[in-house]
Image 1 (cartoon, rainbow, N blue to C red):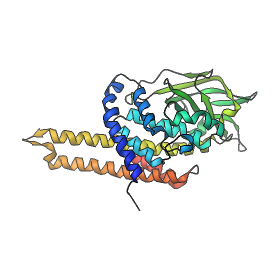
Image 2 (image 1 turned 180 degrees about the vertical axis):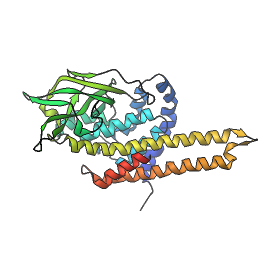
Image 3 (image 1 turned 90 degrees about the vertical axis):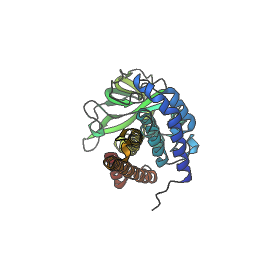
Image 4 (image 1 turned 45 degrees about the horizontal axis):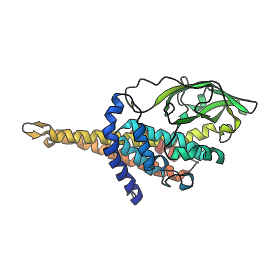
Length: 331
């Protein structure tokens, strides 16, 4: 088993590490303190090709893999998790479902701007009553005169209220299946569609540079062609999407853990007691060693899960889902 990153992955890591240090970190405090979205940082991430990392070149992507994306998310989050989640949600939850399950027309319409980072796309699963359980979705979409008429609400939705937000893919109940269970489908709702409302942003404890809003749909009409994938296929699609999202969130968490270790090491080398830096005291060394070990173990399982997900395609296996859950839980 080879634990070494490829030459390309090492280059992505080093590029993102430099970018995080030189661009993200200097902007992070101002963005967080004033609850501002990092438009300039996002623009530069787009110019670096980060939003297109895991997508093939024929759709404008960089031709990388999912592990490369997780490495980028880790390094960006090491400087600011709010910017990290912006990248994670845009790619894993926004662009990926369109790439994986969209029609050629849907891909041609939306992906060029998304993989370039010129526009952001949101993922509307979580609801006030259902949480993130797709089977418990309450939002309804009724087929009427060649259109979907949507009514319902979503909450905690990322990247839906910025000036460059292009739309959202939502889960909605579109009928009942043969077992009389809710038929869950995924539907594309472009920004500015009448009846689609982005409500006031949340007052959060952190991640202030990340855009997060509740959404409401009131007789919101979109063409029938905005169905993403097959009717009734939304649950399987979102299960696959969330598996990748869990791994990427774990990568974000590894970046935060590494930042904590970096800060702790720096403080331990500067702070002195009894005439020496506290890093010379064995009790402090034990704590730092534990932190380093925990971060490295988390990184290892995240990389393993990301590599497995890269090889799985649309058909996510039980093993990959298990690794995704373990990586998120541990990290």
